[in-house]
Image 1 (cartoon, one colour):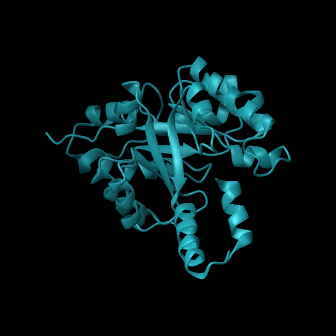
Image 2 (cartoon, rainbow, N blue to C red):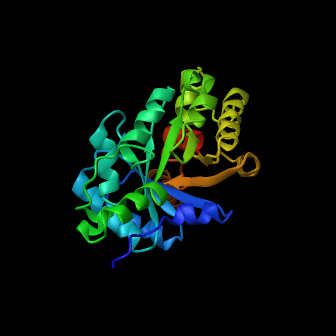
Length: 271
């Protein structure tokens, strides 16, 4: 019988190891292959802010599997199909942004998990079910054990009830969004501001208390701190930032001038 692909990230963190993620804004599957050559555990593909389409996403996911990389798709928030289709393209995980309530967290679980965790609508005729080449019972168990769900905490409102959100069963990880959180509290781009760091630590503590894994969107130069907080899944950088920085360095090294001071400051803030 054909075998469904297990999650590399879940395998690593279940073994007490760490996992590395590269965020990709560019939609070319060749960028995914380049990420695979780096040895990263997975790639983060974005459907929230990036103009991608489903067929191309399936090609990106297929490219990742060539290198045993997991794929995490950050979804458009709110729609059932937006949550389920990435899995049916055989993404390993989804990331749901801007979770603000316990009910939202429960609804996500309900839509994407099989019985007894949720009430996912079944269609094993895509790559995630090997086109109906495995029994439904095997497919359903795989959905619940080798696919994962990440919820993002990105607002003061969500932070106030993060313990209750973390207690919801059926999902796997919490990821603190320092960018949007800092914006919401009037500290735009200040990811290392004490208020933002305190919020990140509160999210991590709530996750661990309720048996969830901790993931981060960026290290912001605080690797040792986030490791000490119990983080296991690390986003190390983004294609647009690394390519932008490399291109500017090539031009500036040749011309001897700083061609784009404004974009340099943006790059520094992002890092």
